[in-house]
Length: 446
Ligand code: MV4
Image (cartoon, rainbow, N blue to C red; front, top):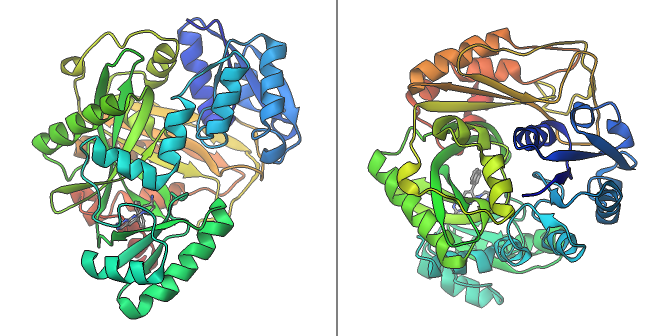
């Protein structure tokens, strides 16, 4: 097992990792920018190293500074957390070349899933259902035209290097295709350094359902059920829940076992998330994330499994030690992402936190680096707290969430707490009746 882990991240996720390390008796090294010198993640770690000025590219994305910090502090492994360098295959390689353990999958698996076309091909080979489309990059407009009429309109043009919605263009018919292709290629080239695009049938109102998997270095893999992440605005998730209110127990078991089978087939190791679009009882693979995710706590709540502990254990080469039959699902969990943002414009709202009171009580967990008097810097993601609630069933979970949202006080900065308070009272939410476009429609109408 590792003795000392450097956490190459900040905020609530750095705290989450430090807590798992402490539970395991592993020493921790925090890294921080000059803007984060007084941050909770620095206070909670055993030691800390300043790695650069506020801008992320000069600090949390500064590979050389992070590797130097790990060397100076005598760490034997690096946990990348999420965002920043977590899905950077070259960083994972560098970490290993410098003799540190990388707490994540192999650089090859990160690179494979970063290329959305290669990922889709791997998914097909591993037996996962995918969205019908081109089975590779589309070059000539004439080829795109032929493929699109085969697939059927509307079609979606996606960037091979994409993900997260960037460089996606819909074409509703043949007259629209040339424009959509050129816009998609231009955006792909500008954002990902490659203008490679591929085509898919456009799914109209799907749900976004993702399956959590966990695999060791010895060929064992389990799934930990799914999360419904359909409630999002501009590709930013707002509220997630597990299990999905849309799935039957049979659907859950079927997609979960296929996901676990697929990661065994590709030799994947570590934690990972397989993303599907789901509509009318059918799953379509779209992408795989090769990192711990923001919403992992809802899976921890319904399975009782500490995902970060398991991630560290398998990265150190330990066998999983249990099979699928040992994974039991209990109750329902919901996560609200609390952002420092203006409730009308959604612009980030950095500043001094003048008052902080987190809710507690049965079934309530808050992951946050905020404290009375803490400062939310303007340089990073606006997520400042995750409110995670667990109860025996969905309605009791919603009632607990209402109670917890009522107790939560964050003063001095704007937050989306009121958005969550209103959202969970809506009849469609109460009924679990929503798709990936529902929240944006609801926000326009309220
Ligand atoms: C789609 C789709 C409809 N049909 N693919 C957006 C982000 C990227 N990861 C995949 N995305 C989508 N792919 C097909 N063939 C609709 C979306 C999509 C979406 C997906 C998940 C969560 C929120 C979304 C919001 C808008 C569009």
